[in-house]
Length: 94
Image 1: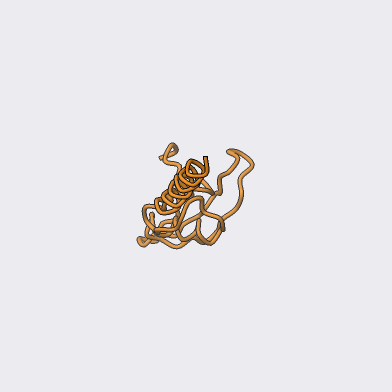
Image 2 (image 1 turned 90 degrees about the horizontal axis):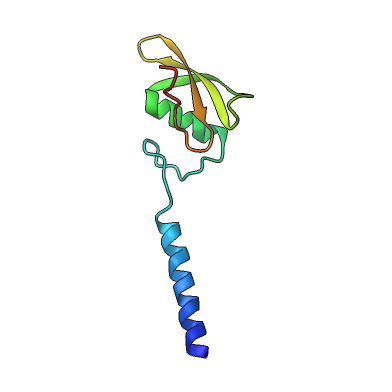
């Protein structure tokens, strides 16, 4: 009985540590997901679009998104919706 408990405990430990080792990361910045700060979201947007976020604000709809205005290298300003947990840019309006 004691051996079974030890084996089960080891299995749980291995499963937990392997999940931590393979935590999802943002593809451009390498930050662990979910993104937990607005600075991480800004970094993700700037990395993906190769521009500078000049304004960012929460949206009422869709919930969980931020609206970012990004100054692109060619001088254009682009507005995008960004998932606040993954940093993924919503491409449905392009």
